[in-house]
Length: 367
Ligand SMILES: C[S@@+](CC[C@H](N)C(=O)[O-])C[C@H]1O[C@@H](n2cnc3c(N)ncnc32)[C@H](O)[C@@H]1O
Image (tube, rainbow, N blue to C red; front, side):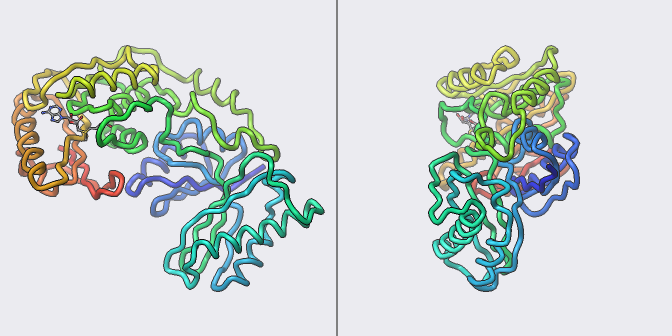
Protein backbone atom coordinates (compact mmCIF):
# COMPACT_ATOMS: atom_id res chain seq x y z
CA UNK A 1 0.00 0.00 0.00
CA UNK A 2 1.33 3.48 -0.86
CA UNK A 3 1.33 5.63 2.27
CA UNK A 4 2.32 9.20 3.07
CA UNK A 5 4.80 9.64 5.93
CA UNK A 6 6.19 12.50 7.96
CA UNK A 7 9.54 12.28 9.74
CA UNK A 8 9.98 15.03 12.32
CA UNK A 9 13.59 16.03 12.96
CA UNK A 10 15.49 18.61 15.01
CA UNK A 11 15.43 22.14 13.58
CA UNK A 12 18.36 22.60 11.24
CA UNK A 13 18.57 18.90 10.33
CA UNK A 14 15.94 18.92 7.56
CA UNK A 15 18.67 18.82 4.86
CA UNK A 16 20.55 15.75 6.13
CA UNK A 17 17.27 14.01 7.09
CA UNK A 18 15.80 14.60 3.60
CA UNK A 19 18.99 13.42 1.91
CA UNK A 20 19.20 10.17 3.84
CA UNK A 21 15.55 9.35 3.10
CA UNK A 22 16.13 10.08 -0.62
CA UNK A 23 19.21 7.88 -0.45
CA UNK A 24 17.02 5.03 0.85
CA UNK A 25 15.01 5.32 -2.37
CA UNK A 26 11.92 6.88 -0.77
CA UNK A 27 9.70 8.96 -3.01
CA UNK A 28 8.36 12.53 -3.00
CA UNK A 29 10.77 13.61 -0.25
CA UNK A 30 9.93 17.17 0.78
CA UNK A 31 11.55 18.99 3.70
CA UNK A 32 9.78 21.64 5.77
CA UNK A 33 10.64 23.32 9.06
CA UNK A 34 11.46 20.50 11.48
CA UNK A 35 9.99 17.70 9.36
CA UNK A 36 10.40 15.75 6.13
CA UNK A 37 7.46 14.27 4.20
CA UNK A 38 7.81 11.27 1.90
CA UNK A 39 5.76 8.46 0.38
CA UNK A 40 6.39 4.74 0.42
CA UNK A 41 5.18 1.28 1.30
CA UNK A 42 4.95 -0.56 4.63
CA UNK A 43 8.47 -1.89 3.99
CA UNK A 44 9.69 1.68 3.48
CA UNK A 45 8.13 2.52 6.86
CA UNK A 46 10.21 -0.24 8.49
CA UNK A 47 13.35 0.81 6.60
CA UNK A 48 13.00 4.48 7.58
CA UNK A 49 12.61 3.49 11.25
CA UNK A 50 15.51 1.05 11.29
CA UNK A 51 17.97 3.00 9.12
CA UNK A 52 17.38 6.70 9.72
CA UNK A 53 20.19 8.42 11.63
CA UNK A 54 18.70 11.92 11.75
CA UNK A 55 14.88 11.63 12.00
CA UNK A 56 13.19 11.65 15.42
CA UNK A 57 10.28 9.38 14.42
CA UNK A 58 8.22 8.18 11.47
CA UNK A 59 4.53 9.12 11.36
CA UNK A 60 1.85 7.98 8.92
CA UNK A 61 -0.10 10.95 7.57
CA UNK A 62 -3.76 9.90 7.96
CA UNK A 63 -5.28 13.12 6.62
CA UNK A 64 -5.58 16.89 6.66
CA UNK A 65 -8.61 19.03 7.44
CA UNK A 66 -9.70 22.63 7.96
CA UNK A 67 -10.26 23.21 11.67
CA UNK A 68 -11.45 26.76 12.30
CA UNK A 69 -13.87 25.43 14.96
CA UNK A 70 -14.68 22.15 16.73
CA UNK A 71 -17.45 21.21 14.28
CA UNK A 72 -15.22 21.37 11.21
CA UNK A 73 -12.43 19.56 13.10
CA UNK A 74 -14.79 16.76 14.22
CA UNK A 75 -16.30 16.27 10.76
CA UNK A 76 -12.90 16.41 9.05
CA UNK A 77 -11.35 13.86 11.41
CA UNK A 78 -14.36 11.53 11.26
CA UNK A 79 -14.15 11.51 7.45
CA UNK A 80 -10.61 10.04 7.58
CA UNK A 81 -10.15 6.28 7.02
CA UNK A 82 -9.02 5.34 10.53
CA UNK A 83 -10.17 1.72 10.13
CA UNK A 84 -7.44 1.26 7.52
CA UNK A 85 -4.91 1.54 10.34
CA UNK A 86 -6.60 0.87 13.68
CA UNK A 87 -8.19 -2.56 14.25
CA UNK A 88 -11.25 -3.29 16.40
CA UNK A 89 -9.29 -3.60 19.67
CA UNK A 90 -6.56 -0.98 19.02
CA UNK A 91 -5.93 1.70 21.66
CA UNK A 92 -5.69 5.20 20.21
CA UNK A 93 -4.47 7.90 22.63
CA UNK A 94 -4.23 11.40 21.14
CA UNK A 95 -1.59 14.12 21.58
CA UNK A 96 -0.40 17.12 19.62
CA UNK A 97 0.12 20.85 19.45
CA UNK A 98 -1.59 23.99 18.22
CA UNK A 99 0.02 27.07 16.75
CA UNK A 100 -1.44 30.31 15.28
CA UNK A 101 -4.98 28.83 15.37
CA UNK A 102 -8.42 29.79 16.68
CA UNK A 103 -8.60 26.63 18.82
CA UNK A 104 -5.97 26.82 21.53
CA UNK A 105 -7.07 24.32 24.20
CA UNK A 106 -5.06 21.11 23.90
CA UNK A 107 -7.32 19.01 26.18
CA UNK A 108 -10.42 20.10 24.20
CA UNK A 109 -8.66 19.28 20.92
CA UNK A 110 -7.63 15.87 22.23
CA UNK A 111 -11.20 15.09 23.36
CA UNK A 112 -12.72 16.20 20.07
CA UNK A 113 -10.28 14.20 17.93
CA UNK A 114 -10.67 11.16 20.17
CA UNK A 115 -14.48 11.30 19.85
CA UNK A 116 -14.30 11.73 16.07
CA UNK A 117 -11.97 8.73 15.65
CA UNK A 118 -14.12 6.64 18.03
CA UNK A 119 -17.24 7.58 16.04
CA UNK A 120 -15.58 6.50 12.80
CA UNK A 121 -14.22 3.22 14.18
CA UNK A 122 -17.45 2.44 16.08
CA UNK A 123 -19.37 2.70 12.84
CA UNK A 124 -16.81 0.65 10.89
CA UNK A 125 -16.81 -2.17 13.49
CA UNK A 126 -20.47 -1.97 14.53
CA UNK A 127 -19.53 -1.23 18.15
CA UNK A 128 -20.93 1.38 20.49
CA UNK A 129 -17.93 1.20 22.80
CA UNK A 130 -14.46 0.37 21.53
CA UNK A 131 -12.52 -1.88 23.94
CA UNK A 132 -9.06 -0.31 23.29
CA UNK A 133 -7.46 -3.40 24.87
CA UNK A 134 -5.00 -4.13 22.03
CA UNK A 135 -1.76 -2.57 20.85
CA UNK A 136 -1.29 1.22 20.77
CA UNK A 137 -1.82 3.46 17.76
CA UNK A 138 -0.59 6.81 19.08
CA UNK A 139 -2.48 9.53 17.23
CA UNK A 140 -0.67 12.85 16.83
CA UNK A 141 -2.10 16.10 15.55
CA UNK A 142 -0.60 19.40 14.44
CA UNK A 143 -3.04 22.32 14.27
CA UNK A 144 -1.28 25.15 12.46
CA UNK A 145 -3.06 28.22 11.04
CA UNK A 146 -6.46 26.50 11.52
CA UNK A 147 -5.44 23.46 9.46
CA UNK A 148 -5.09 20.12 11.21
CA UNK A 149 -2.86 17.26 10.08
CA UNK A 150 -3.52 13.89 11.72
CA UNK A 151 -0.85 11.24 12.10
CA UNK A 152 -0.28 7.82 13.64
CA UNK A 153 3.16 7.23 15.17
CA UNK A 154 4.92 4.09 13.89
CA UNK A 155 8.05 4.52 16.04
CA UNK A 156 7.23 4.46 19.78
CA UNK A 157 10.26 5.57 21.82
CA UNK A 158 12.02 8.29 19.76
CA UNK A 159 14.54 7.18 17.13
CA UNK A 160 17.36 8.85 19.06
CA UNK A 161 16.94 6.00 21.54
CA UNK A 162 19.28 3.58 19.78
CA UNK A 163 19.55 1.39 22.85
CA UNK A 164 23.25 1.90 23.60
CA UNK A 165 23.07 4.78 26.06
CA UNK A 166 21.39 3.91 29.34
CA UNK A 167 24.46 5.18 31.24
CA UNK A 168 24.10 8.92 31.65
CA UNK A 169 26.78 11.59 31.74
CA UNK A 170 26.29 15.33 32.20
CA UNK A 171 24.90 17.20 29.17
CA UNK A 172 24.86 14.37 26.63
CA UNK A 173 24.12 15.36 23.06
CA UNK A 174 21.16 13.70 21.38
CA UNK A 175 22.21 10.75 19.20
CA UNK A 176 20.36 12.11 16.14
CA UNK A 177 22.14 15.47 16.45
CA UNK A 178 25.53 13.81 16.99
CA UNK A 179 24.98 11.68 13.87
CA UNK A 180 24.05 14.76 11.84
CA UNK A 181 27.12 16.71 13.03
CA UNK A 182 29.31 13.82 11.85
CA UNK A 183 27.50 13.76 8.50
CA UNK A 184 27.62 17.53 7.95
CA UNK A 185 31.36 17.49 8.73
CA UNK A 186 31.75 15.01 5.86
CA UNK A 187 33.07 11.98 7.79
CA UNK A 188 32.39 8.80 5.81
CA UNK A 189 34.81 6.36 7.45
CA UNK A 190 37.92 7.57 5.61
CA UNK A 191 40.85 9.20 7.41
CA UNK A 192 41.01 9.83 11.14
CA UNK A 193 38.14 10.97 13.33
CA UNK A 194 38.38 12.44 16.81
CA UNK A 195 36.16 13.83 19.57
CA UNK A 196 38.47 15.30 22.25
CA UNK A 197 35.56 16.29 24.58
CA UNK A 198 33.77 12.96 24.19
CA UNK A 199 31.73 12.75 27.44
CA UNK A 200 29.59 9.61 27.12
CA UNK A 201 31.00 9.01 23.64
CA UNK A 202 27.88 9.78 21.59
CA UNK A 203 29.66 11.62 18.73
CA UNK A 204 32.40 8.99 18.37
CA UNK A 205 29.87 6.13 18.56
CA UNK A 206 27.68 7.73 15.88
CA UNK A 207 30.79 8.28 13.72
CA UNK A 208 31.72 4.60 14.11
CA UNK A 209 28.15 3.46 13.33
CA UNK A 210 28.12 5.64 10.20
CA UNK A 211 31.57 4.42 9.11
CA UNK A 212 30.42 0.79 9.42
CA UNK A 213 27.13 1.68 7.72
CA UNK A 214 25.33 0.05 10.66
CA UNK A 215 21.63 0.84 10.74
CA UNK A 216 21.18 2.68 14.08
CA UNK A 217 17.83 1.05 14.90
CA UNK A 218 18.89 -2.52 14.16
CA UNK A 219 18.84 -3.60 17.83
CA UNK A 220 15.58 -2.04 18.98
CA UNK A 221 11.88 -2.50 18.38
CA UNK A 222 9.22 -0.11 17.05
CA UNK A 223 5.55 0.52 17.84
CA UNK A 224 4.33 -0.58 14.40
CA UNK A 225 5.95 -4.02 14.71
CA UNK A 226 2.97 -5.25 16.71
CA UNK A 227 0.32 -3.74 14.44
CA UNK A 228 -2.31 -5.89 12.74
CA UNK A 229 -3.46 -3.90 9.69
CA UNK A 230 -0.22 -2.27 8.56
CA UNK A 231 2.40 -4.99 8.39
CA UNK A 232 5.98 -5.21 7.16
CA UNK A 233 8.71 -7.85 7.37
CA UNK A 234 10.84 -5.92 9.87
CA UNK A 235 13.36 -8.73 10.34
CA UNK A 236 13.94 -8.95 6.61
CA UNK A 237 14.75 -5.21 6.58
CA UNK A 238 17.15 -5.79 9.50
CA UNK A 239 18.83 -8.66 7.62
CA UNK A 240 19.16 -6.58 4.50
CA UNK A 241 20.68 -3.72 6.53
CA UNK A 242 23.13 -6.12 8.19
CA UNK A 243 24.24 -7.31 4.75
CA UNK A 244 25.21 -3.75 3.85
CA UNK A 245 27.62 -3.24 6.74
CA UNK A 246 31.31 -2.60 5.99
CA UNK A 247 34.09 -4.24 7.90
CA UNK A 248 37.22 -2.17 7.41
CA UNK A 249 39.72 -0.55 9.74
CA UNK A 250 38.64 2.79 11.12
CA UNK A 251 40.55 5.21 13.29
CA UNK A 252 38.16 6.87 15.66
CA UNK A 253 39.66 8.61 18.70
CA UNK A 254 37.64 9.72 21.71
CA UNK A 255 38.98 11.35 24.86
CA UNK A 256 37.80 13.34 27.85
CA UNK A 257 39.48 14.84 30.89
CA UNK A 258 37.05 13.01 33.17
CA UNK A 259 38.02 9.33 33.66
CA UNK A 260 34.46 8.47 34.73
CA UNK A 261 33.04 9.86 31.46
CA UNK A 262 35.54 7.77 29.48
CA UNK A 263 34.47 4.62 31.37
CA UNK A 264 30.81 5.36 30.57
CA UNK A 265 31.72 6.05 26.93
CA UNK A 266 33.48 2.68 26.70
CA UNK A 267 30.41 0.90 28.09
CA UNK A 268 28.14 2.73 25.65
CA UNK A 269 30.43 1.82 22.73
CA UNK A 270 30.39 -1.82 23.82
CA UNK A 271 26.60 -1.83 23.86
CA UNK A 272 26.57 -0.21 20.40
CA UNK A 273 28.95 -2.93 19.17
CA UNK A 274 31.63 -0.45 18.06
CA UNK A 275 34.07 -0.53 21.02
CA UNK A 276 36.75 -2.19 18.86
CA UNK A 277 36.59 0.73 16.42
CA UNK A 278 37.17 3.51 18.96
CA UNK A 279 40.39 4.29 20.81
CA UNK A 280 39.41 5.83 24.12
CA UNK A 281 41.73 7.74 26.42
CA UNK A 282 41.68 10.17 29.34
CA UNK A 283 43.23 13.39 28.06
CA UNK A 284 43.09 17.17 28.40
CA UNK A 285 41.94 18.69 25.09
CA UNK A 286 43.96 21.78 26.05
CA UNK A 287 47.05 19.64 25.41
CA UNK A 288 45.71 18.04 22.22
CA UNK A 289 48.63 16.28 20.55
CA UNK A 290 47.28 13.82 17.95
CA UNK A 291 48.98 14.00 14.57
CA UNK A 292 47.14 13.13 11.37
CA UNK A 293 47.59 13.08 7.62
CA UNK A 294 44.00 14.16 7.28
CA UNK A 295 41.30 13.93 9.88
CA UNK A 296 38.01 15.33 11.11
CA UNK A 297 37.25 16.55 14.61
CA UNK A 298 33.61 16.86 15.64
CA UNK A 299 33.11 17.95 19.20
CA UNK A 300 30.67 19.26 21.77
CA UNK A 301 32.80 21.03 24.41
CA UNK A 302 31.39 22.47 27.65
CA UNK A 303 29.46 25.69 26.88
CA UNK A 304 29.29 27.15 30.38
CA UNK A 305 25.72 27.94 31.37
CA UNK A 306 26.49 30.37 34.19
CA UNK A 307 28.79 33.37 33.93
CA UNK A 308 31.70 31.87 35.84
CA UNK A 309 31.43 28.66 33.86
CA UNK A 310 31.46 30.62 30.60
CA UNK A 311 34.85 32.05 31.52
CA UNK A 312 36.17 28.57 32.29
CA UNK A 313 34.65 27.14 29.09
CA UNK A 314 36.31 29.90 27.04
CA UNK A 315 39.68 29.18 28.63
CA UNK A 316 39.32 25.53 27.67
CA UNK A 317 38.45 26.46 24.06
CA UNK A 318 41.42 28.86 23.85
CA UNK A 319 43.82 26.16 25.02
CA UNK A 320 42.26 23.60 22.66
CA UNK A 321 42.40 26.07 19.73
CA UNK A 322 46.09 26.72 20.27
CA UNK A 323 46.93 23.04 20.68
CA UNK A 324 44.94 21.79 17.68
CA UNK A 325 46.27 24.48 15.35
CA UNK A 326 49.78 23.29 16.15
CA UNK A 327 48.72 19.91 14.70
CA UNK A 328 47.86 20.59 11.06
CA UNK A 329 45.71 18.19 9.07
CA UNK A 330 42.66 18.29 11.36
CA UNK A 331 39.44 19.91 10.17
CA UNK A 332 37.75 21.12 13.35
CA UNK A 333 33.97 21.29 13.79
CA UNK A 334 32.54 22.55 17.09
CA UNK A 335 28.94 22.83 18.28
CA UNK A 336 28.62 25.61 20.86
CA UNK A 337 26.12 28.11 22.23
CA UNK A 338 28.89 30.70 22.65
CA UNK A 339 28.44 33.36 19.94
CA UNK A 340 32.06 34.38 20.53
CA UNK A 341 33.47 30.91 20.06
CA UNK A 342 35.61 31.89 17.05
CA UNK A 343 37.33 34.64 19.03
CA UNK A 344 38.31 32.26 21.83
CA UNK A 345 39.15 29.37 19.51
CA UNK A 346 41.41 31.80 17.69
CA UNK A 347 40.26 31.40 14.05
CA UNK A 348 37.37 32.32 11.79
CA UNK A 349 34.99 29.51 10.84
CA UNK A 350 34.53 28.87 7.11
CA UNK A 351 30.85 28.26 7.88
CA UNK A 352 28.49 28.51 10.87
CA UNK A 353 25.21 26.54 10.77
CA UNK A 354 22.38 27.36 13.13
CA UNK A 355 21.23 24.37 15.18
CA UNK A 356 19.51 23.58 18.45
CA UNK A 357 21.04 21.32 21.06
CA UNK A 358 17.89 20.55 23.07
CA UNK A 359 16.47 23.98 23.87
CA UNK A 360 19.85 25.72 23.53
CA UNK A 361 20.41 27.77 20.37
CA UNK A 362 23.81 26.83 19.00
CA UNK A 363 26.14 27.39 16.12
CA UNK A 364 27.97 24.57 14.36
CA UNK A 365 31.33 26.23 13.74
CA UNK A 366 33.10 24.57 10.83
CA UNK A 367 36.76 25.65 10.59
C1 LIG B 1 29.04 18.81 26.77
S1 LIG B 1 30.00 17.50 27.42
C2 LIG B 1 30.15 16.38 26.06
C3 LIG B 1 28.99 15.47 25.99
C4 LIG B 1 29.11 14.38 24.92
N1 LIG B 1 29.02 14.95 23.58
C5 LIG B 1 28.05 13.30 25.15
O1 LIG B 1 27.13 13.18 24.34
O2 LIG B 1 28.09 12.64 26.17
C6 LIG B 1 31.59 18.20 27.54
C7 LIG B 1 32.68 17.27 28.04
O3 LIG B 1 33.93 17.96 28.04
C8 LIG B 1 34.72 17.42 29.09
N2 LIG B 1 35.85 18.34 29.36
C9 LIG B 1 35.86 19.50 30.06
N3 LIG B 1 37.09 20.05 30.04
C10 LIG B 1 37.87 19.24 29.28
C11 LIG B 1 39.23 19.30 28.86
N4 LIG B 1 40.04 20.29 29.22
N5 LIG B 1 39.67 18.30 28.07
C12 LIG B 1 38.88 17.28 27.68
N6 LIG B 1 37.59 17.18 28.07
C13 LIG B 1 37.10 18.16 28.85
C14 LIG B 1 33.75 17.21 30.22
O4 LIG B 1 34.25 16.25 31.12
C15 LIG B 1 32.48 16.77 29.47
O5 LIG B 1 32.39 15.36 29.44
